[in-house]
Length: 86
Image 1: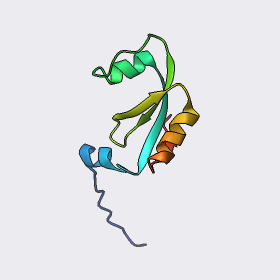
Image 2: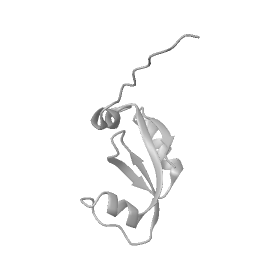
Image 3: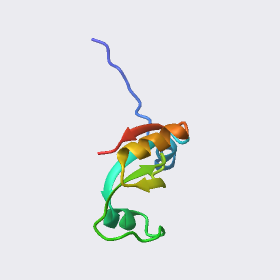
């Protein structure tokens, strides 16, 4: 039997955050309260509002809206591959 000596390479948090930048956009369902907690610098939204967020690869918000389909269209319009975040 052969022994394999694997070396695990660890990607830095910064490099991981940039993975897919300019190519991938993440779509996530959240409430306005969750959005404001994650992005306190963004103008406050009405409390308890259900919305969808289109996020850059590093997690920064690109656009928010009340329609998942509109955000998917926005991603395609900007040549981004939309993927869902659970």
